Image (tube, rainbow, N blue to C red; front, side, top):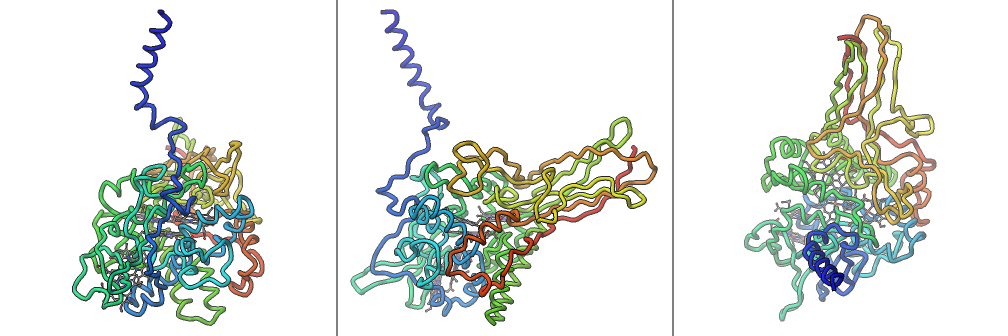
Length: 487
Ligand code: HEC
Ligand code: HEC
Ligand code: HEC
Ligand code: HEC
Ligand code: HEC
């Protein structure tokens, strides 16, 4: 009898504790409901009707400025990107075609819902599938279903596209935009519907929050990093930094002041200078000077955004009045999310430092790229290490299920790195040259990806790439400070 009461008590206590335990429990990640998400593992939805999607060239006839700005952007390149195509090819070989749908849900959403895109490669695709994230993706977004995704937030393509509707008078195209439409909005080509979502980060979050296709654990968390940071509190959205000119972005970041309506631009410019560089080479080879100039402009914008993102301080530490350590503090000054964000286990941001004595003799170096393009093991990187099922180091998004190390720098936050140093007793100050450097990936990974591009992308003919060059590096910060060896 006694025993029974006890177990009953236990049960009651257990039940009381349940609601508190649930969110943290291992099995708490909801499964994707296939009824709600017919394109799973992508969470994209399409309200199907006779209304068709419109290619960007058609929108360009009445919106030439937006078209020019979007052309050559990472969104225009999202599907054609040879780096993406290489990785997609590897993914399909490793886990089969199902996974391609997840990738396409963000890299070419219309391609996946209309069934145009069936995997890697560009052959035979129409403009709207090829053009990745084009006008009619974002401006057909009617709503999102973030509340019913595994993490109850926008993720893995959880937006609903509805390019138009059938009426008694025939098909009407509907374009969703951020503003209250004026009279004659759409000039008979489309009707306009005000959609407040377009002014918010949640529009972007649908694609900028990437989760594992099966375990659903977060892999790229730009949205969550933003949401947990000061820019979300101050109501500065992705658009306020990435859909504006350089000066306006700096103002958004420094003063938390929202841009005015006329200040928005469709650049979607971030950090990927490498892709703009490749596009410029391809445009020059193809004789398209206008596109080459456009790509060059976007290349410079990305480099400038990277150079504006961070700040570095050198703070010497003395023991017994002698220099013992150099503390280097790296600030994330203007990125609205962690630095770097998204593919944090692929992107590389690191410190290179050279310390010289008064005679110019080098007494310490760290983080110098080797002849093979690789970084030395002691280099201090602000990135992450992904782990697979067996808790081994992994890089591919279908393998990575968690992270063993996350050294990215939160928005408006900083990270400190310490270097032990034994300074010679000589009198004069030391010269400390420090650089914060950025590149898209380590050399080995870039090699592997470009080797995997589908056979209908000819890297030599299109990009002039006959061998793999050393990946270019951008110096986000360069500075030299003088440090006395004694206090
Ligand atoms: C990644 C999503 C996205 C894509 C792709 C996109 N837009 Fe937009 N668009 C937005 C957002 C967000 C705004 C609100 C910011 C603004 O006012 O410009 C906007 C605003 C607009 C406006 C209203 C601008 C104004 O001030 O009146 C027009 C027109 C427009 N977009 C057309 C286009 C065209 C044409 C394309 C393709 C060349 C395109 N968009 C591609 C997200 C997108
Ligand atoms: C939820 C949306 C989403 C899904 C799903 C997704 N991606 Fe992406 N992908 C992105 C975004 C956003 C970026 C840009 C991140 C950045 O540049 O920092 C990106 C970037 C990439 C890049 C880097 C491209 C470059 O030029 O450096 C590769 C490669 C890539 N994705 C491959 C894939 C593959 C393969 C899959 C499927 C296994 C996939 N992605 C699924 C949204 C997604
Ligand atoms: C025949 C001309 C024409 C075509 C083609 C056209 N539009 Fe428009 N659109 C207009 C006009 C005119 C306006 C109102 C003035 C403005 O905002 O530029 C407008 C407004 C918009 C707005 C702003 C809505 C708001 O109030 O926030 C968006 C977004 C938009 N169009 C998207 C598109 C997209 C996407 C395409 C291609 C699928 C497209 N348009 C094709 C003429 C056109
Ligand atoms: C339909 C999915 C989708 C939506 C919606 C979307 N993006 Fe993207 N975005 C992508 C993908 C995919 C890439 C990467 C393409 C690649 O690397 O090949 C990307 C790339 C970018 C980049 C370039 C990153 C770099 O490394 O330079 C920026 C900036 C960006 N997006 C901002 C935005 C903003 C701001 C919004 C909201 C207004 C938005 N995106 C909405 C899919 C999307
Ligand atoms: C306060 C300004 C600001 C805001 C807000 C902001 N970003 Fe950024 N973003 C930056 C800067 C600066 C960089 C370049 C440094 C870097 O790579 O992080 C960047 C880089 C990126 C990159 C490329 C990352 C890489 O390292 O390859 C992507 C993708 C991106 N942002 C998407 C977004 C999205 C999505 C949002 C909204 C959730 C957003 N950003 C909000 C300033 C901002």
